[in-house]
Image 1 (cartoon, rainbow, N blue to C red):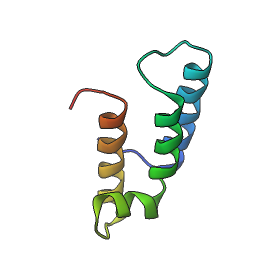
Image 2: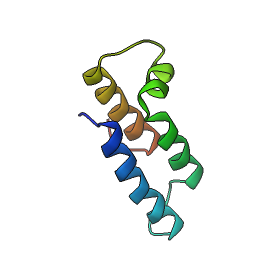
Image 3: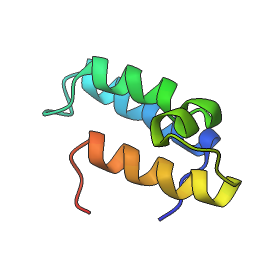
Length: 73
């Protein structure tokens, strides 16, 4: 599973709207806001704790978002 930074921001913006409109339950606006910051390339590398290639960041970003939003592994 791969997720680019631009795609992440677009999808998280939609999730954020769903949370604000109370269409999505079980996810807080704070969680979505944090993810919008953490999916940025430098922040993703800092969370993982090492420098990564673009493809490694895309994979790590997908895992991070899935874990924080409570998705299946």
